[in-house]
Length: 428
Ligand SMILES: Cc1ncc(COP(=O)(O)O)c(C=O)c1O
Image (cartoon, rainbow, N blue to C red; front, top):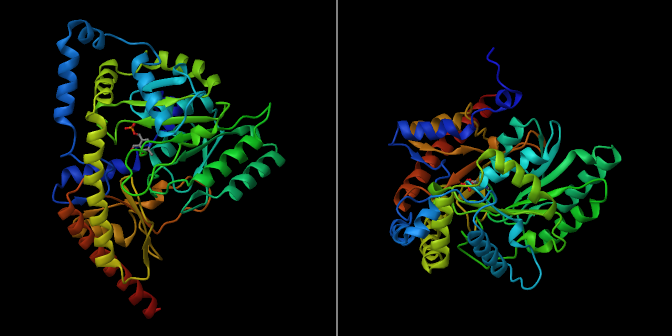
C-alpha cells in the first residue's frame, strides 16, 4: 500500500465530482446539480478596468505582483471590514483589521479552521443538511460532523441546547469544538437563520462556554450578498460583542468571480496567531494580485452595480425554477420545496422516493437528460437523521429556458418513479 497519510486515506472524492464529470462529458444534459455561477454575468469589463488601473501604475502594479503579508493586504482587509460594519449597522467598537484574514476562497479558510481546531474524534455541530464539501473535509480530518434538526428559521435552539447539555453530562463537551452554520441562504436548503434564532443560538453557545471549554461558531456567509427578496439581517458575528466566539467567513466567489479565489474571514482574537502561523505554512498569504483586483472593484461603484445586475439575473432564474416546479409538480402531494429568498438552490422533498444514485429516480432523470444533487450527500454521518428523499436543484448556471426544460424533464422522471412505486405497492 502506498505510504499515504491518514488524512489522505480518509479524504474521499467529493460526491458532486461524478455529477460534474457527467455534465462535462454529456453537454446535452441539463445540469441542475453544479453549484457554479451564471457564466454570462461574470464581470469581464469591471475586471478589465480594475486590472488596467492596477497595472497602469508601475509601482502599484509591481506591488500587486509581489507577495503580500500572510494575513493579506491591509487595505483590502480594511475595506472588507468596513463593508461588513456598514452591512451590520455597526459603529464604534468592533473587530479590528488585525482580526481579518484573506484566503484563497472561503473553502480554504474553512479547511484551515478545521486543521487548527480539530483533533481526530472531535466534533463539529452543524445543520442537517449542510454544505457537503465541508462535511467531506471534516471526514478527512477524522472529526465528526453531528447534524442538528432545522426548520425554516434555522437550526432548532432546543436541540442545540440539549446536545450541549448531554455532552457536558457525559464528559464529552470538550470534544465539541465548533458549530458550523451557513447563516444566509444555506447550501443546500436555502434557509436563512432568522434574527431571533441568531440571538437564541448565540445565547446558548455563550452560556455553555466557560473557562475550560470553548465552542466556536463558524458563521459561513458565502451567500449573504445574493438576496433577491426581503431585507438583509445583521450577521451572527455582530452579536459577539466580546469577539471571542464567532468566526465569520465570506467570499467573492458567488458575488463577483469564483475564478479569482478571494475568500476572507474575521477571527476571534485568540485564533489570529494560530491561523496566521498555519497560513504561513500553506502559502504565505492568499494570492495578492486577486486581492488587489477585488480592492479596486470594491472601492469603485463597480461592485455594488454588478451585485444589482446579478441579483436581477438570479431573481429571474429563481422565479423560473419555482414557477416551473409549480407548473409541472405542483399538484403532486409527494413533492414540496422550501421557499428561497436568495442563494443558488432549491431544496426539494419527494416523499417516499429514494433520490440517491442507486435509486430509480436518479437513473430516470439522467435518461431524460437532467441532473440533480441527491440530498443524502448533504447530511452529516451523525445526529439528525439523513433524509433520502431530498434533492438539491441549482438555478445558478442554466438559462431560464433550460431551467424550465430541466424541471419539465425532472417532473417526468418523478412522475414515472412515483407511478412505478404505486404499481409495486398495488402488486404487493
Ligand atoms: C456554503 C458555502 N461555503 C463556502 C463555499 C466556498 O466557496 P469559495 O471557496 O469559492 O469561497 C461554498 C461554495 O460553494 C459554499 O456553498
